[in-house]
Length: 130
Image 1 (cartoon, rainbow, N blue to C red):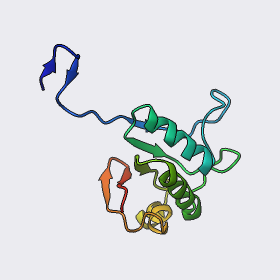
Image 2: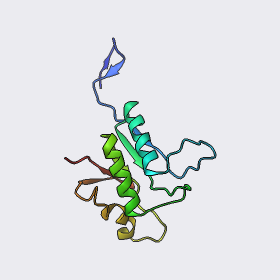
Image 3: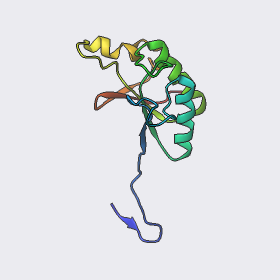
């Protein structure tokens, strides 16, 4: 890696990833996005700020866990309408779930079923398809 002395930048690209909601409730931060539209709005803001990748969890309107394919499909659809971020949706990581159950929220999601997932840690990175 070389450093450009005039601009303090490197020649290597940088990928900024954001984890927008994890298991955080709104008590410490009322801006945690839970609904598909809130996650999409956050995706747009993060991309505008320079992010390239977003990790998210499906959540219910009360902040509870929602591992349904319908919720993940709606999130991806809404994000795709406003953003080009790479998406790294959470698997349904529930203790005792089989691999099929852990992937069910993604595998049954029509919006992303034709994407080519690449294993990345405990989540899948989903590239935008055209």
